[in-house]
Image (cartoon, rainbow, N blue to C red):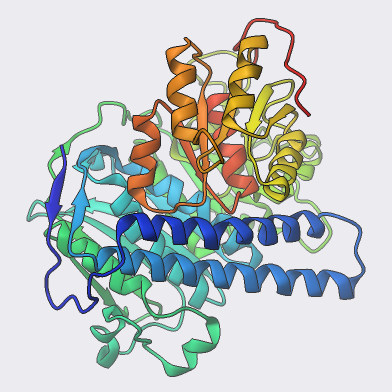
Length: 511
């Protein structure tokens, strides 16, 4: 189902750049930026002096700033063409919030911030354009991370009494003055003139409001008495309650000890959404006194003194909370008496699973599987065909894939890819969309016609949501936007690469 909605409420951008021209501009801007940012990230992982590391960090941050400007300007121009196309489909609200938070987690971590999410069981699934709702939430949450210096960001969703689905992004930043709460949603506006030093063209919130209006919804911002800013978006979506939201922690008491109010609140809501009773405290001693002996304690590593590890309270079932880059501490914490770990931002299903495993009450025997965010390689032994004509982008993708345990063959064109697929089978095909000769879409159509069933994931510098739909229409399974992010690549591999997915076969040797 596709719905076309004209812009309303004072759209000021004249149409004049055709969709094809915007796609070409997106490709031309983002392709070299992919190389710049990708190589900067790789360089940061090498042996550098402190001075060199500062230079590389400045290079990467400047590139990310430029990428944000390119994204906003191109998207704003596209929305100004005269229409907003909506493609409603069932959307899992909980999964959507998880994706947004995990995508922004590395950026938050770099600033020393926490980011968390939670939804009530009744959130279920809504009929909406997932890409457009995600874009609004990413704009809100990205702004929150940018302007918050301490504390963190909490992303939630709820069903209002009036029948609306309301998404809320709350932060512990400086807040928005009452006099600026409408102006911040205008194009090229800043709530605080001094905020311009943080970068941005003031378009993200204007894009969010335009998209919300296209969905017959509204956006707004409030500053609670305790400080910070709360951005919200609500619209009337049809809702289908999710039967999968079970009460796995019914009659269980779970304690949470963390110095972060964001972590405590996010965990509390997730525990209650799973049917449990939550007790929270900002230190382990207070929590241990308050929690009954049969409670499972979730203890944040952030409580540990510098350079030291915590020990599990004597005679208590406890689980340690870690950031993804703290995976090296897992073995030490097991030796210290903890019965498992959870990775921040927390996932509700994983939280319930680890709690039950800690007390031996899981539905299945054995320990829960490793979180893919902390394993050293998510696709060990997977055979990947990389179809990419740009040598710098190919070098970047090959390096990141190799780090995840993949064996990579490189095809420099669609024609080479079809030849490789006649000689061997692959667990995954990464397909550049714009190549000389056969495009990625045409190559995918041909390989599907030839009976190739391997997952195909698009690599594209076109950032618009309709590009994703074009990739799926061509027979692809997923979509990665350049600049290629190590975290996004890892998540994609976790979704699509399974051990032993293909039969043993000789791989084509293409370079």
